[in-house]
Image (tube, rainbow, N blue to C red; front, top):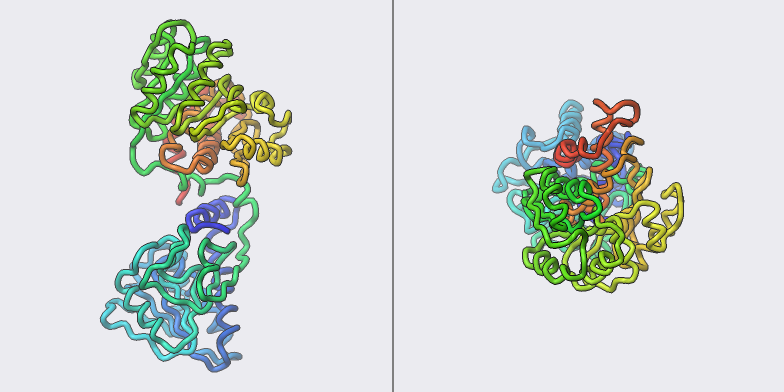
Length: 485
């Protein structure tokens, strides 16, 4: 089962793996043509009603395949485009429309819903709207849908019936009622509840497009607007870690980034970046005396908390972490020394934990040099904890206990100290907008790609001269400059 939103990400990941959308469209169109042949008797008239997106592009390919079979099967195929051809939305759909025009196929442009004329036919291919469009149908699709439902013909829908929400599994009241649905790669939520025969077509998407995090995953978590506040609780023995995490959260789209730290080091942390808002408390390290005030600040302003960078391992600091996480109810990224208390904490908070290999073992996870060889154990630990794990290694492994993915981007030079703190901050920035698992996947990819981009220009072989702070300027370019291309 895969949602429409996730399917779009997988398509993009497949393209990054060398299987372009154009190739997938060819396979999709062929699958639709096969389905039509199964329901269309020789001599049948087939009407294809297509929109201007890639769903329509799939149908244009199907029309070509059906017309190629026409000499043997005698199909009379008419393709109706809803709207003018110059407004077809993607290059690959436009190319396949041009192939129909140049091949002298029977194509028509329905530019006015009042003049929509569905020819007499035995089979209708519904390819008006795909998985990216939800809600009640608007013109000209609404008029076309009424005509399709009123026709005495078998209706074959491409991927989902027009008007079907492939994320929520609901169907618009004026959506198309299909007799058969040819859906791609995997079944979409809710299709099984329709009064229709559903066929899942393998269109050649590699399993790696789902297993490995790719550029498509950025679109599932990328902020569309600058919102949210990061609240980094850390510092004491170490000062750079909370500053890096807080700056990474800003670079990932948050409006404000606060750092709560002991007054003994607050000035030093502030000195790293004037963009940070440092809130000092008394002492040289975190104690339980500060928990109540930290909770009030974290809960009172709907912050996304980053707990742990630079915290140190003093027993009183760990007890403060335990008390905070047990009482906190919001979203939080837990990193560094604070991870040690997570297995014993009963909390209503939404946690994303970002352990390195050593910290993962401390939490009860596997001791493994290659995290990819321990994905099952990591998934089992995530299920037991009830939290998302983003285990950091040469390859990162992300799991919520049910879903597990691997992020294999990055360069050896990122083994330098501080890149994990950046990852915690990026995760917080994305957690403001996305499902925790999707936020963690996208953060792992963004952090690794930032390192790759920097190493391509500087940093010596494999980025061996990179410093963590160098990556900060790369984060926005990865989040908003890659993916959805």
